[in-house]
Length: 159
Image (cartoon, rainbow, N blue to C red; front, top):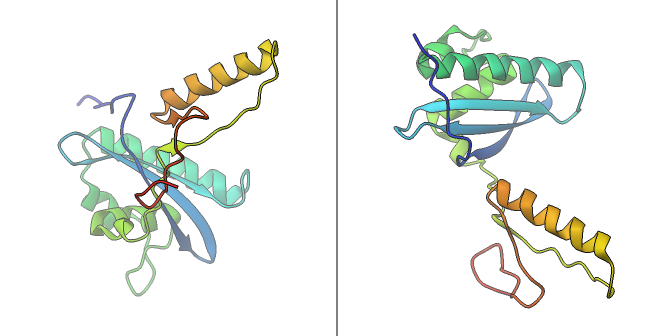
């Protein structure tokens, strides 16, 4: 059995949820055929034990998915409470993804960020920083507008 890797550039869905009174953010990506390929989970308290456990279990779930483990099998195998609800953050995230519930709480990041840097003549360090920032934004599929372009309205129009 071989591992199927996702492409380096891929669309992801980001959504938030609560599990056992703690807030988590998850990111999910799919294979071209529509199967879930990876999930990442993080806690609102960075570097906490809950955050570390959530991240590690999400990596293990992602590896299982990339080795063709069915999503429904993973969901059934994870710990649940007496009412059948998931007891762990990865269980909550996978259940939402399996049931399509993440689409209702999805917060897609805007694909366009407006960055205006005022440069004085001859400031090469700022120009270099701006060029580096553009490269990083393009690497993640984002676009940097020049000062002459209109700032888009995140709800569809322009401002």
